[in-house]
Length: 214
Image 1: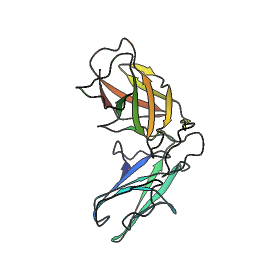
Image 2 (image 1 turned 90 degrees about the vertical axis):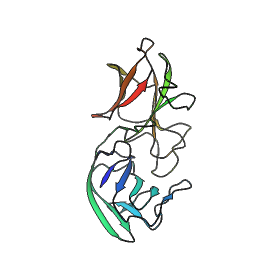
Image 3 (image 1 turned 120 degrees about the vertical axis):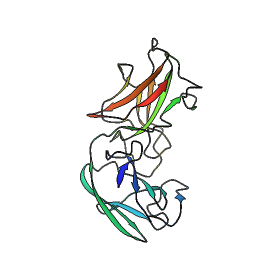
């Protein structure tokens, strides 16, 4: 069916990256090669109601797309392929924060935070995710996110680490990317050197957890 592309749960917000799973969806694996993203890839289209969505990737078993920034409520998602049409009803909330399990936590240098390259107390780290919902400015689905100024999220956002609620210095779309949100967060100076679960709260929604090595 249709799920959030980061958490693989049926939770969605405006601008979210989504994945559709099935069989016989596309004849081969195809990745969008340029921005803005195409709305037809390998003969596959995805619509929400009657509006076509930008596509990042199609394959026989999976299709990745981006929701528009102006759609909330209950809607029909329809995928059309050479082998037929499938529809599913989804509910799009204002926020549906979801962290990517393997690549959400990054040093300011751009290197992944891992057990071999852990974060340090008092370091500013970047958190990448999807599902933070509406943003300021004129963001458009399938188009590279703006950098000057960057698009900030409208919902209140906090990061939960080691029992502390941290306010990010920046919460918005990652400049130059599609459907990807970025948080800039300074870790507490007294944060214990350990593996900590990290969650993001946006509006009334809380994300899945990923592990931060410190």
